[in-house]
Length: 413
Image 1 (cartoon, rainbow, N blue to C red):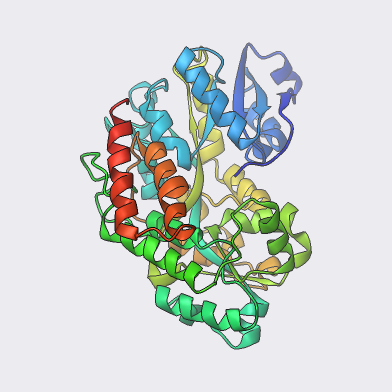
Image 2: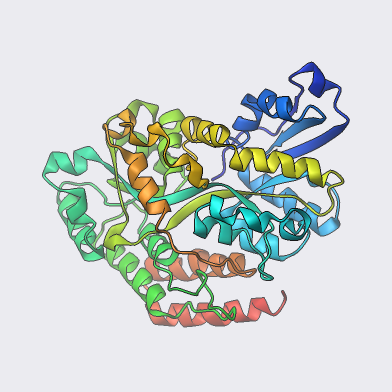
């Protein structure tokens, strides 16, 4: 998610002891996942008076572009860096990160985290290269005026994808699009209905599986939604999308738990009480977003960086602070008994939404990232899917062509 904010470098001095620290490390991330380190750094200094922390904050796109360049050149990366789950497979498996299993025995902490998230931070050798900072249990946000106020029930319209489409047809009669863009339906199916043992786009042997039943289903439902006129024909993060979230001009948004925090804090703060949240259609559990922490091999302060990584990912109070202030759902199991999980969320109409998110988090299957995920994702979502939804291309033809292109581009890896 690109947050269009100016790059910001902060020197977090805190206590006098920290100001006299012998070791200075830099933490690279993006807003708002840099917030906890900024707000709570004195607590870290209390336990680590010999470490001083600088925070370099860039928007999501610039952060990952700069990190990729720094890893390739061997210079310029922070001592501890954030990586979005969307980038984790490609970045970790290209090399340049510290093996946390060999260096710090990070594998011993596996049981502290939800299984699927800890597995995503591993390389192809099975060792740990990144620790999960937060996760994004996949859900369906909906506007209550288009759901309960019209006599529909969330559990019924999410019974399966056909039920969701049927609801969309009823909404169309009232002039309300079901989704911002039909492609979001395909993306949800692709990302959350992954077969056991496969990654999103590849099998266990890194062979592309984009002509499989899952992709055919995803593209077919997206194409059907467009043909039936159920989408607003605008994509996520566009100006029309932002306005639609504020005005309720479309009914649902597939996303992670984190979107509730974004809606409440800056996207649509005036819409409190108008939103509800439900699990994904057809009862599938899936991840939608998440952030990891890794230590570049070029860092000269790996031990200090690992202490900061452990504090951010394994200190219960710190992780809960991040959850409370940023809606960044914890990967840390020790947080799941916190009273805040039982609290009603006024912004979501009084739902105990965190209990839903927790149930999803505990049931998401592990999906192994692949080093070619970025290649496949771009070809499928930016080329093949638009050719089907926008141009009416045959689903199977589009997917077959995409698979050939993926294989061709993988030869350069």
